[in-house]
Amino acid sequence: MAATGIPDSILKLARQRNAPVILELDLTDGLMEARPSDPLAALMSRHQPTITDVLTGLKLAGDDERVKALVVKVGGRPIGLAVVQELREAVKRLGEAGKPTYAWAETFGEFSAGNLPYYLATAFETVYMQPSGDLGLTGISMERVFLRGSLDKLGISMEVGARHEYKSAAEQLTEDRVLPGGPRGDPADGRIGRRATGRRHRRTLGFPPATRP
Image (tube, rainbow, N blue to C red):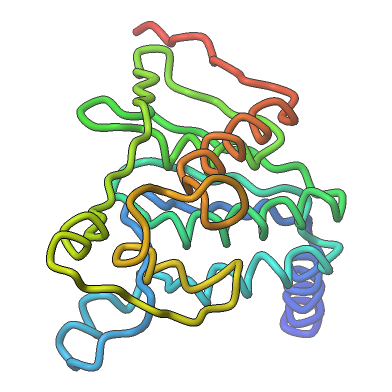
């Protein structure tokens, strides 16, 4: 019995290593940018992935034949726009590698704006939302303070050199309005456009049937 038991265990482990894998990722607790330096905080957050962990894992999954699909729960704690954009690009690359991608959420903005989690979800091939959930999308606006008028009244003029498509911070002192067109235009326009484009290119928005006791 012992002689046959050892090979059976090895074969079982080999099958597990080669078995199909469905990646599951829960983003409702947010993502850390880096591991905390405090030992106690590092211990408490040892199971919480960092942005680098997730991006690296998604990149490796695209080349791993065992990975058959990606399922991600979105919503919960807010994630910054820059991180959402990085996650979107990683998810799209995984989809382009032939891996089905699924996002699901209990709600998109039940008590707050659901713009960012919904924007992230539009990068997935299929999106599911709990039937009782809310789709709470709000308008996007930005405010900027321009001091050019005040400086003119004080007789102060500014001369600033900058590369034309970057370094728009000086416009607060040299202009009296947002300059039209290009990256220096209204960033909200780009964000709205990207969200609409992502929604238009996704193929399925699913609402699973409610279960009854």
